[in-house]
Length: 167
Figure 1 (cartoon, rainbow, N blue to C red):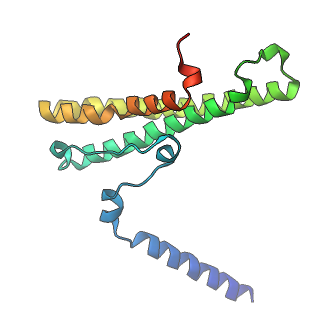
Figure 2 (cartoon, rainbow, N blue to C red):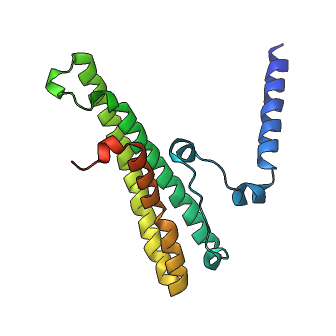
Figure 3 (tube, rainbow, N blue to C red):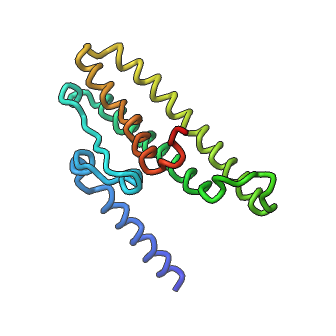
């Protein structure tokens, strides 16, 4: 009986791996997929400028940088949502449990931010290397894609206006 269950489990695992790896990969790369950041903040397409489409390493960079941007935007959005209850409260007047929650969330955000900042720095190093090998028009096209980070931050400011209003 154990042998049958093991064989059946192994067969299901092998079949699922086969189906997932044998899909139409060109469709996966070219079709825009809705990300978590798109769901929470609004759709923001990743458009590859025509001047860069024939450079696979630059296209991969653009998609990777978009993922890092979206991950960071989600982190900021989640942070603002998590700390919304504590917005106008004095830390000294919080209960012990609330202080623990705030410190735990702060530590988690700090660790996640460090990881993302490392990825961000690596991608900016790649950007500088790419710019050396691109024509002026290609570099300008790449720069417009990099500006996507600023667009995500504007979406966050719009969603959480109470935190970003200048008084």
